[in-house]
Length: 156
Image (cartoon, rainbow, N blue to C red; front, side):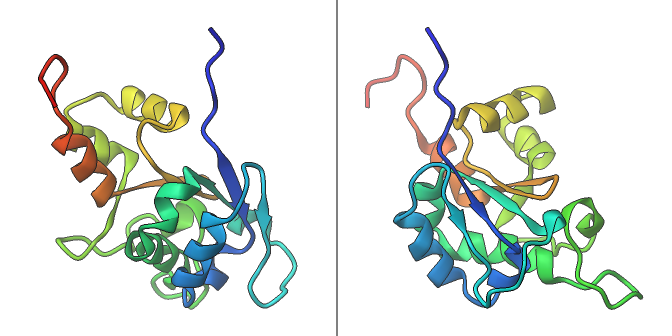
């Protein structure tokens, strides 16, 4: 049986949406698979800031988690004053209970699975994620939902 790829929506210049996560969430809720959401102020696409949003239906209902992911794009890198994107933002995202997203590696550790299994779960759409350039983030609420599901063989 052929595997069904999760729906995916491309968002142009993700950092430009950082101040408008609710509007982006609303657009995601009405977007078909393969749709492209343009920059909110009409700026030309920056290839390093293209976001591939897997499971847009999930993200449309999680504007706080979406805001956290978008905020990571808009954080300046230490010392240079430029916006970050992709792997350049590594190490500047806040940690602690206020952080709403995790890296795939952190999600894997939380779930008790291997890094490869977590990336496979993201690819199959079993773990909701947002792709920003080369960076993939998993919302904490998605992990909470996965962990609160009944165990295999347990009545619901």
